[in-house]
Image 1 (cartoon, one colour):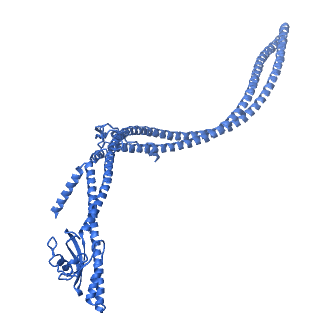
Image 2 (cartoon, one colour):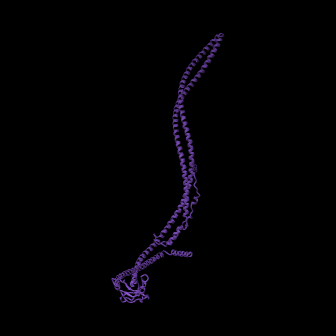
Image 3 (cartoon, helix red, strand yellow):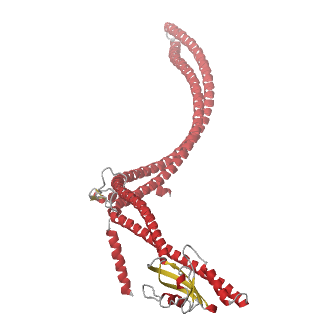
Length: 562
C-alpha cells in the first residue's frame, strides 16, 4: 500500500510538474480542447440518453399496448366463462379486436401459441395457422421460439432479435414484448424496430452535434478573445511573473522585465512599474533613513546640549532663588531700618526745631552780651579817664611834694604810689578794654556765627523735614520693593519648576530621539534586504551605527527635582 501510495504521489508530482512547465498558450489551448471534448462528450451523452429514453418510451408503449390487449382478452375470456359467448367466438372476436389495435405509426399486435403457431398477424395474414418454430433471423436465432421463451419464466418479457422491415427483405434489430395468456395458451406480442429509434438517435446526434459545433464555435471565439485578452493582460508567461514576484519577495529589485512596445496596461508592465517604483521607494526610504539617522544624531546632540544648559539654568535659578530670599530679607530689613530712620528723622526734626529755638535764644543772649560789653567798654573808658586824671593829679602832687621838699617827701611817696596805681589802673583798664574789645569782637563774631547757626539750623530743619519725607517715601518704596521681590521670588520658584519640567521634557525628547534612532536602524536593516541598482541597500554608510553609541544624558536638575 505504501509503495502504491508513493507511486501515485510521484505520478501526481510528475503531472503537476508537467503542467507547471507548460506555457500559458498551451494551457489555454488545452483548456479549449478540453471544452471541445466536454461539449462532444455532453452531446454524445445527450444523444445516448435520448436513445435510451426513446427505447424506454417504446418499451413502455409496447407494455401498455400488450397489457391493454391482455385486458381485452381477459374480457372476452370472462364472457366465454359466463356462457355469453362460446370459447371459439370469444377467441375469434378477441383476435379481431387485437388485430385492430395500434400505437404510433407502425405499432401492432400479433398472437401465437406455445408450439409456436401464428394465430393472428395483421401485417402478415398469410402466416396465420402456420407453425413458425423453425423461423430464424439472419443471425441464426430461432425468432418465434425466442419470443415464446421470453414469457415462460414470469409470464411476460422482452425478446431481442433481427426482423425484416415491412415490404422489405432487410433484417434490422427489433425488440418485442410478450405476455402469455395461459387459459388459451396465447402469447400476445408487440414489437418495434430499433432502426426507428436509431434513426431518431442519429438525427438527434446530428442535431446535438450541430448545437455542439455552434456552441463550440462561440466558445472557441470567446476563448480566443479571452486568450488574446489574457495574454495582453499578462504581457508574458505567468511563470515569468511568478519568478519576478519571487525575486521581488526576496528583495531582488534588479531583474530585467521585458514587455511589448506600447504595453502599459499588462500585468508584466505593471510589475515592471511596481519594481521601478519599489526601487525608487526603497532608495528614498534608504536616503530618508540616513537623513533620519543624521537628524536624530543632531537632535540627540542638541538634547545633550539643551540638557546641560537646562541643568545650568536650573542651578542658576536655584542660586537666584536663594539670592532672592536673601535680598527679600535684606529689603525687609532695609524697610524696617527705613521706618526706624523715618522715626529718627522725625525725632531729629523735633530736635532741630528745639535747636533752632535755642539758637534764637542764644542769638538774643549774644545781643544782650554785646550790649553789656559795650556798657563795660564805656565804664572802662570812664575808669581809664579816672586813672588818667588820677595820674595827672599824682603827677601834680609829686610836683607839689617836690616843691615842698622834705615835708612833702612822704606825700611825694604817696603821690608816687597813687601815680603808680593810676598807671596800673590805666594799664589794667586798657587791658580790660582790650579784653572787652576782644570779647565784644568775639561776641559779635559769636552773634554772627549764632545767626549763621540759626540760618543753618533752619536749613537743617528744612533738610530734616525733607529727609523725613524722603525716609517715609523710602519706607513705602521698601515695602513695595519687598512685595515686588516676594513676587519675583515666587516667579523664580515657578521658573525653577518650569525648568525642572523642561528638564523632564528634554529627557523624554532624548528618549524619543533614541527610540527614533533605533527605528531608523531597524528601518535601514529592513531596507537592506532589497537589492537596488545592482547592489544591496546596506552597502552605503549609515549614521545609525554611530547613533547607537549616543546615549541621552539625564539632566541633574531633573534628577534633583525628583
